[in-house]
Amino acid sequence: MAGISEEAARSVLMEVYASIMDMSDDEIFSSRSENLEEAFRRLDVLAAEEVEERVVERLIGDPRLREAREVISRLRSVYSLRLEVEAARSILDDPDPWNALRSFKFYPNYLIIAEAEMRGASLESGDIVAFIGSGPLPLSLILLCSEYDLTGVGVERVARWAELSRDVLDRLGLSSRIEILVGDHFSFTLDRDCDLVMVAAMAEPKGEIFRHLESAINPGTRVSYRIYERGLRRLLDSDPAFDPPPELREDLRIRPEPPVNNTSVFLIESR
Figure: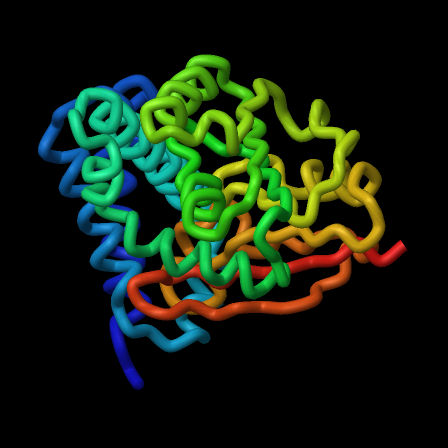
């Protein structure tokens, strides 16, 4: 497999970087610029390219790309938030909120991810899951609780996104099944039984979050997070080299099936 060349991949990254480097988070969140949508589209196309892993490793280690990758990671984070907010608001406005939810472009991905979370954490009906960084549209919690009869707790640090997600849950009839708390990982304490703690892909800083979880969760509780293991998607990850603390032992990896691209990693507290 030859795939895209190192220079071609670098060229796309630098061109996207040049097109967005001066944009603020507010501009990324609200702009209707065709350039912004084109930048996001080009990154999606690049991420899907076949590539040799040695090429990816060289690009990750290239100091010339460090700033570009940081800016691109910010773009993807803010733009993904924007898509979630837009989907959440469409659910509130639609006379058929579940139809609006199923129309969200990533809904099929999350169905597969929810099944992987159930399988990877050996969850059963009635179990409790928590999600750190649940966001304005807590789709993982929604599907786990509606499809598999679980109870959920979301932790979201931005109050307006927490409130928006509560409105969405109310509209979907899930307010009695999923509770949303305003806070961050430091405000997350397990004063109740919990069978799985999920950490959002965009939740940062990863090292600090997992060090706190190691001391906060009960022995035997599983923790899950998602990573890109292979290909150029690794370049778009904010921290592709992240390693959890040794007290959280890796228990299982469930690798992706299309249309999902990320691996679900399951850890277990080993004290």
